[in-house]
Image: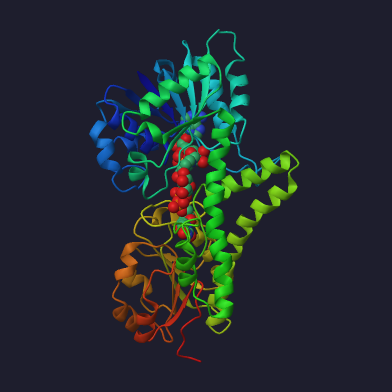
Length: 454
Ligand code: NAD
Ligand code: UDX
């Protein structure tokens, strides 16, 4: 069995490494147009940071796991082709700012059609609007070569930072196939691959459209929980309630559950916003305006939460931050990744910069990406060493929940800062009372501030 995966990114690389690791008899080739990325996958400096990934890659690389820029050859030799290319939000034309940009996916479908010499199973690994498979099938079968392409949907549910654990022990694998003889046969073949390590009862099957839509829905529900708790965090700050107590109280209701109730400066990442906007666009396309407005609000609360965080900084620091040094601790959109796509830190830094603050950004893994994201801003520095970043700062804004930030020497930090020394905990991960006792002015999400100045 030969598998080819088109797209060697955050999803293609780790998922294929896991399949190769768990299925030693299957030859897996990951191809990409980005030669630099492919070269990096062949070294110990992988192109993405993901805990535990290097070990899994090294277990099979050169044995049954290969990375290559020979896309046509990869396609021709494959029995199953996973397509895991990016599907960003469209920035132009019809649906700009909401619809998925499917040009990379369609280019792949055309390439597969043009170079294939035998029947193949095509697996949608990318997140796609419901009914994309229909359009892709038309493209794939538009040739006259008589080749049969069977399209399956197999969305990926891994989260960055925990990708290896998610892939090794998934809550579920979802595979959608057509309710035809060839559709069910192909579906069975993909089930058999995952069954090498995933218990059968966790491999769910459905028709293609349900599978495509389930992926968008899962992300929308997860993001909705974050926006819901963040909306309540604003009310906590206004009323003196504490969001941690509220999260705990509601999370112990088994019908609600405790996960994804952590109030924060907002959700980021390449998926949530893009996938919700895509869902909104789909609802609009089908004339379901009320459903569209409902999901749109999840994104709007997220933007509000980020701007609210900056407004809190401005108000607490006497209405001006012009010329003040603000140390940003954490730029990645969450801990344990170097990924900064849609990170709340981007918007926060831009808004702080509009107020003429002097910003210094620190992050253990995301500084290269941060430099690209903030390339147009003035008055900005990047410093990997946290203690240097906070030296002489007027304020600290903690934006990523990296573990290292929880155990910093805050006494030393306090003494190196300007006074009054402000700390804004955008992740609610620090010991606020202890920081207050050290002398800090402490502000967090969903809790009244702790100030010595009142
Ligand atoms: P990515 O940008 O990291 O990787 C995509 C790769 O595809 C890039 O390396 C790009 O060069 C390559 N590519 C684009 N067009 C190509 C072509 N025509 N031929 C060959 N290679 C091509 O993206 P990602 O984060 O891995 O996401 C991929 C898909 O998976 C998206 O649809 C995304 O929504 C979905 N997804 C992502 C995550 C995540 O955590 N990042 C989780 C679940 C699902
Ligand atoms: C998400 C989905 O979880 C995953 O299933 C899907 O495949 C891809 O999209 P990811 O974006 O990598 O994964 O990370 P996730 O852990 O979902 O966090 C997304 C954002 O929400 C992060 O910025 C995170 O900090 C934030 N978040 C999460 C909160 O602010 N509060 C929470 O309680 C949980």
